Every structure is written in structure tokens, then in C-alpha cells.
Image 1: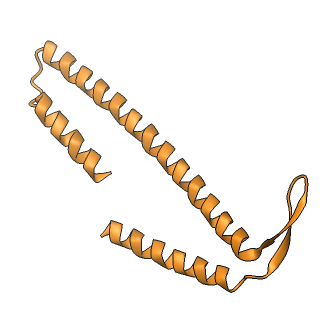
Image 2: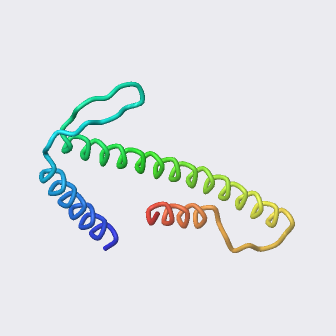
Image 3: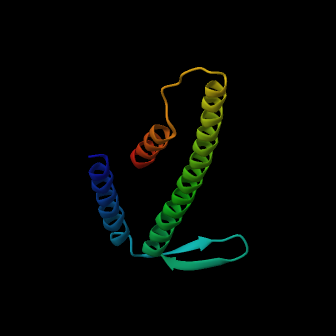
Length: 110
């Protein structure tokens, strides 16, 4: 359901941007850092949206990588603590297969 909502919002956003861009086809003057140029407004709008998408995707990807690295560290620490408990003679009722399968289930959810 979450994926469907995302797709619906993405389609609506795309339609809104496309309609807005098509209705703004006149040429406008753009002031860059070192020079001034004239460009159709539709290109400026589409380029701005594209850059926003790229920046947002890059930020999201970085966050995913950071969270995956953090999850690996937490799993390693958890395994270390379970091993310490088992070495101390404390029954944990946790086997390594159960820890791995629960971690894989969390991976597939996120």
C-alpha cells in the first residue's frame, strides 16, 4: 500500500509539473553567476525539478547507506553480547539462525 501511495503522488506531481511547464513557454532572461542568457521558461522549470529530484535521491541514498552501516554495527554488537552471555553460562534462547532471519525480515521491510 505504501508503494502505491508513493506512485500515485509521483504521477500527480509529474502531471502538475508538466502542465505548469507547458503553460509557461515564453522565453525569459536568466542571470547566472558570470553571464546572462535567455532560455525558454519550460526548460528552466524542468531543469529545476530534475535537479531537485537528483539532490533528493542522493540525500535519500546516503541516508540508506548510513542506516545499513549502522544496522551492521548493531547486529555485530548484539552478536558479541549474546556470545558473552553464552560464555557466562546464561541461557539466551537465541540461536544465530534466528538472529539472522529476523535481521533479514527487517531488511526487507525497510
